[in-house]
Length: 479
RNA sequence: CGGGGCGUGGCGCAGUCCGGCUAGCGCGCUUGCUUUGGGAGCAAGAGGUCGGAGGUUCGAAUCCUCUCGCCCCGACCA
Image 1: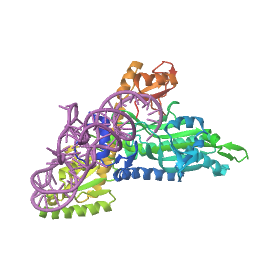
Image 2 (image 1 turned 30 degrees about the horizontal axis):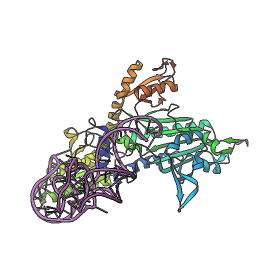
Image 3 (image 1 turned 90 degrees about the vertical axis):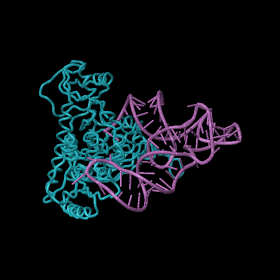
Image 4 (image 1 turned 60 degrees about the horizontal axis):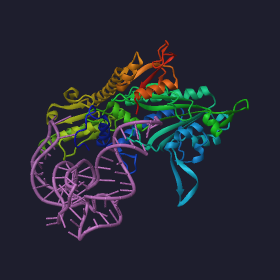
C-alpha cells in the first residue's frame, strides 16, 4: 500500500526501483537471501505475460512438459563450456532422508542437460523430429548481488528446448522464437527491442549462436530481455541425441533453447514507470481500470454508488479488467495515489457532479495531472474506455521508442564512444575481436549488447582499432 | 570475496558514546464518530525475550567476546 512518496528516478534510480516494487505490491523479500516472493498483484501481471507467450508457442507447434528440479551433478560435467559457465552459481543438494547422497544433485539453473538426457532416450528416428518442448517453471542460480525481478536466486521463466534434423531448421527455430519475443515486447509490453547476435564473450555457456532482444531502461542501461540459442550439435554430442535419417545413417540432432524470465517485469517497471510509481501497459495490466466513487453525504453515496455499480457491470461485461475501489476508510486522494503507484492505466472517477451530468472523469496513468484527465458521457463508456486503453498502449510504445532512439549515439571516435556510453548506447562498427571488446569494457565499463540483424549496407572501420569492419554493434552499460 | 551501512512492536527510527527503575516516538493496525473531486481529523486501544549465544555487573538495548543475517557499492550472470 502506498504510504509516502518514492524517491524520484533522477535522484536515485536504484532506490526508486526497490521501493516501487514493494509499494506497488508486486513482490516482497523472502527469508532466504536473494529470493523473492511474488505477490498476487505481481503474479497476475506475470500470468498475463505467460498466457500470451504460451498461446504463441502453441500456435507454432510447441507443447508443454515438466522436467525435474533436481539434476545429477554428473550431467553438468558432460558439456565443457556449460559446466564452466554454470559451476559458480549452482546450488547442490548433498543430503536426502537424513543420509549423504552418493551422487550430489544440482538444483536446476537451466535444464539443457536433463532435457538432453531425456531427448537421447526419446529420439530414434527422423520421424521423431522436430521435438518442440517448453517447460514453465523456476530455476535457481546462486547470485551474488540480487535485485527483485532483475536478478534473484530463484526466478520464473519458460525454457524452450527443441531438437531438429538440420542446422537450417534449428536456426530457423531460434529466429522464429526471437520474433515471437520481439512481438511480445512491442505489442504487449510496449517495449522497443533490438534483435541481434551476442558476441562470443556474451554467449550462453555451450551455445554456438546466442541471439537476444535488448531493451533500454529509463536510466539508459541495457537489459537483455530474452534470449534464443542455437547449440549446433554441442549438446547432442554430449548427450548422444541421435537419430537415423531417411537413408538409414546415424546423425546428431541440432538443438536450440530459449527463454524469457520474470526479469521482463523489471524491464516493464524500468521502461514505463514514473516518479508516481508503476505504469503498466494496458494489455498486460492485471487491472486495466479502477472506478473510484466519490461522495460527501449519505444521500450522495446512494446516488453515486448506483451509477458506479451500473458502470462496473457494463464494463465487466465489455471484457475490461476492472476494479471497484469502494473502501470507505481512505480518502479519494489516497486512492488516486495508491492506484497510480500500482500502475493502473485508467482511473474512472464517479462523483455527484457526474451523476447529475451523466458523465465520468477519466484519468490516464501515462499522462499526469490535468493533461491526462477527460470528462466523457456515461453512455458508451465501454467503447471510450477501450479506445483510451488502446491509445495508452500505443503512446507508451511510442514514448519508449523515441526515448531509446534519442539515447543511441553514433560516435565518430573512440574517445567519443567512451563518453557516450556513460549515458546511452553507442552504435558503432566493431571488428568483432575479443581484444577490442575487452578494451571498451575496461575503459568505459560498457559491454557489447548485440550485433543487430538490421545493419547498414556499407562497411566501416572498427571504432576501437580502426580495422575494416563489416558489422555494427551496440555498446552500453547493462544490467 | 573486497569496501560501506544496519539489526530495537508490521514499517521507519530515537535511545548505545557516558549502564539505572514501567524501553520511547512517527507511520501503519483495531474500534467508534466525523470525513471523501489529489496522500483526512479526533478519541480510545492492541502490539516489543532490543538479531542470537556467552561474559562483566547489584543492575545490560547500552560495556566485552563470539556468531548469524540483511541492505548498498565493485568483479560474474537471464
